[in-house]
Length: 257
Picture: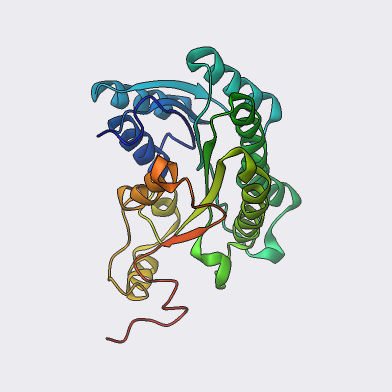
């Protein structure tokens, strides 16, 4: 049975990495997709991939930090499909910098995409879900690094910590409408963003810290997203699920066994 049959799903940051993998899996599960990203060329390629597996996806180039573009994104969802059932707030940037070297503009850009974007999209989706009267699912992304130091990622971690706090409040406020809000917190993932940042030495170091011994692929994170999006998760809200190969329980130690 298709887990998301006829569900209308908005996925942000869908051009690459976890967002792309989520869009493709949701399409295979019967979801009707609105996919968004700032990278229009790669976003259109994902829409073609969805179509190739007999799925439905409408690509909408959008910067989630911009309120006008977010409004336009959800206008398209309503115009195309009449409602929104599932929102996956995946869009994110990293821009690694030491805190003392981070400029105001760099800080604001990370906060704009990673936190303001979650707020803008969640508010828009929640309003539609409340009006529709049939509940809904909101899935946000955090990181295991919210709970452990990761130099150079101060802005990113601060934004993701904000996402977690925001999500718990969102869950409390939206629960009476049968709208759930949950967080998926991955560990290290082989996304294009991480590949462009990490050296081979850092990748090897990361793998030594993961009890299962390997860095995840984007597809390894998607089952958790799919669960939160499914009808079976209707009674699960305000939760943070670490999908990290055991990295969180391993804290800052390198694996010794």
